[in-house]
Image 1: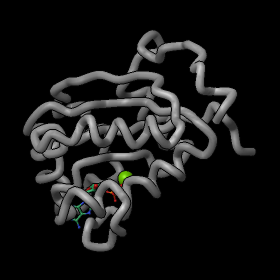
Image 2 (image 1 turned 180 degrees about the vertical axis):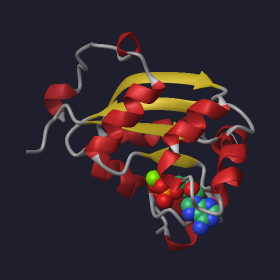
Image 3 (image 1 turned 90 degrees about the vertical axis):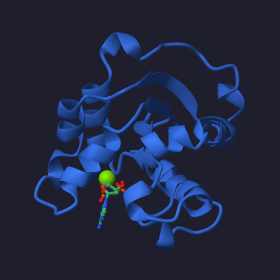
Length: 151
Ligand code: DAT
Ligand code: MG
């Protein structure tokens, strides 16, 4: 059943940070009506990134993907709201920016799959796994958004 407290893990990748897209990306999630639950700016360790992308470990691009993700700081976030996992993926666009429609984050701001600026969980289950991997329970901030009743 759809839950208003569904959560997803979103990360702005090193190219998104370096290209000055942090504010633009956060703005889109705020304006859509999702609630920010956690956020940290960090240089992720290779171990963390390898675990995060463990399901892709046998793909030919895995090593390059880890190197890219480790090449600079990222912004790791948890966003909450009704259908946030699915809607978040729609907001991101397709994995390959070539297939991403204008209006999506990847459709608007990037051109190639190996530099696609943002990560978003692809299911409620993977969101839970990723949130637990990137954040401690104490880092998930509890508060009531004053916009909640209007959204
Ligand atoms: P997504 O990030 O849309 O969930 P994914 O989980 O299949 O896509 O892959 C994770 C990341 O790996 C993706 O954002 C970019 C990179 N990637 C995927 N397919 C690739 C490919 N064919 N060549 C290079 N990088 C690829
Ligand atoms: Mg994925």
